[in-house]
Every structure is written in C-alpha cells, then in structure tokens.
Image (cartoon, rainbow, N blue to C red; front, side, top):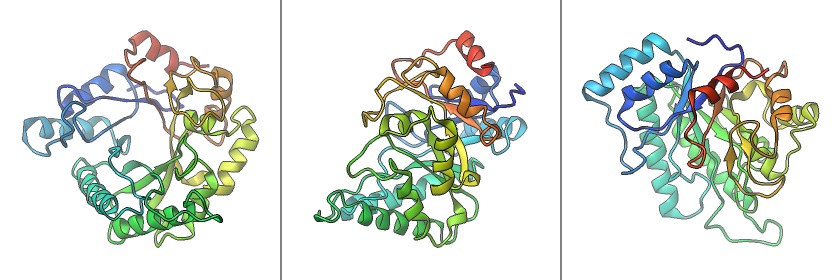
Length: 287
C-alpha cells in the first residue's frame, strides 16, 4: 500500500458491491477510505451476507485495519425535537452501528443534525440548547452498552438551527455525555471555511479546535476545498487546491505537526467525482 505519511484517502461510492470498494482502494494505493452503508440509487442498506460480503471481509482484514470509515446516512437527524424524526433517527443510528460492527469498522462519521421541532424563544431563537440536549440523549442511549464503535461528529457549514457549525456546540455537548470517550470528531475543512472559521490563520484555528474539541479527539479530517465563499453557510466541495480555500492554506493545515498523523479523506462531489489516477497521485504527493 501507499506509504504516504499524511494518510490521504478517498470517499468511495458503492457501484458493484462491497468488494469493489476494497479493490478500488487497492488500485488507487490509498491507505484508507470512507463509504455510505446504502446503495446510492435505491436507498437500501447493504447486505451483510453472501459471497460479496465474505470477500470484502477477507480483503479488508488483509489490507486495512482501523482504516475504513463508515459515513452515516443523511436520513439521521439526532438533534431533532420532532418525535417521529427522533425515533427514526434512533433506529437508523442503531442499525448503522450494527452494520459497522459486522464490517469490523470502528468509526462512524455522523452529522449532528438540526434542532427542528422545538419551540423558539427570544433567548434561543434557533433552539440550539435543546438540539444539543437531544443529541446528547441520542448518543447516550446508543453508546450506553456499546464498546465496538466510536461516533465521529462532523462539523457543518450551515448556520441557524444546525448543530456543529460553531465548535462551541461540541464543547457544550461533551459536558452532557455519559461516555465522552466514545465520541470523537471529524473535521471538514470545506464546512469550517464556509461556516466562517479562518483556516488561513493556521495556529489560531488549531487552538480553537483544541479548546472546544481537544485535538486528541479529532480522529479524521475531511480534506475538502470549498466552491462557496468564506462564511457563506453553503456547502459545496471542490477537490483540494481547486476551490476558494486554496492549496496553501490546506497544506499548512495537513502538514502541521498537530495534524500529520490524523487520517485525511477527500470527498469528491457529483460535479468532480471523475477523479483520475493522475489527479489522485498529484494530491497524494502534495508537497
């Protein structure tokens, strides 16, 4: 496998089965990858039996350790105050944690969601406090008797009722968790930039992360550039170096001594998903 010291991998899309993911990762010579547990065109969950599953397990054990990340489905909103949404999210999160365990995947990347369904007040017009409470309840319920998976909460680009654009949301959440050691974080660089965090001031940005998340709790970085302007609150990825963050700021971040050992995942979008072997090699060999 590629010995790239900065551990850059890719989000891969299900096309022909689980085994295809492993073979694609090996072909690209990436150290690790991320994928959704659902088929993109049908919305159905992957099957955890049959020849494809068995071959996937054989190859993942041979080539990958804790280097595969499962990204939770976008149907899950663990911060909602709507009863039906909360119940559905609870069931889906439990189901996806079972899938992760069956695939021997330790980390599940989860969007914290939005604080919908709560009564707005002048003191808290976006219901952030109640949304964070709801998120804590969901995570405490899931992780009460869970030791095989760790949830990685991802920061968001969006404002208003979205949880996790402000890193302080996660600082408040940590105080409400029964098992904070079972929660980690996934830093998305495009989301941070689009929300309004200044990545160009690398040391100050890292200090903000350390204050609110704890650098030791960041287990994954989504290494994405942004097509949308700074503080736009809009989420649209570009390949690293091809967006408004730029290669210099991203390089300063991923090559920083505090971040060099953290795995990085690039998430190509629908508009730039045709990543060529040449572009992969160029990014993997960023200097």
